Length: 186
Image (cartoon, rainbow, N blue to C red; front, top):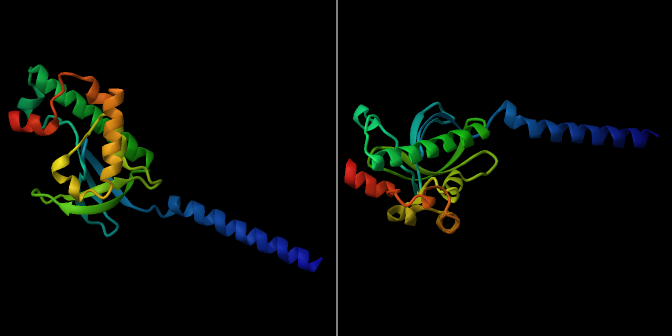
């Protein structure tokens, strides 16, 4: 009888410990806190030490959003088209970040000329944000820097699926790739 009581107590303690550890992530969240989604491929985060870091998504390039008043007031259909897709990409990143409790895990691969960290970005549950965006046709593989992308095979496969399914920008014959847009209009 005493042996059975000890076993039950041991199992109860083990179960309490396991369930307690499962809930720890809610009490002590892991990852960096997202302070702002700047656009479809850039975040402002606060790391565990409280440092503010601007992060550019590795592997991909998302459509542009308007930055100046002139851009916001543009009547050009090509420019408006770019900004409409850029807004959709930004909204999707915001949804994903919210789904992750405003936390992300960064795998920093580089820094860019603007001083931003370049990183692969995952939600706490492992969801790879760049893969989601590319698979949904809201970002494109950015080949000039693909060699610094540890998950390049995943990204390239996602883009092939988006193209073949004509998702997002791949359904829009008037869409101009972000790097081409920047060379034409910036």
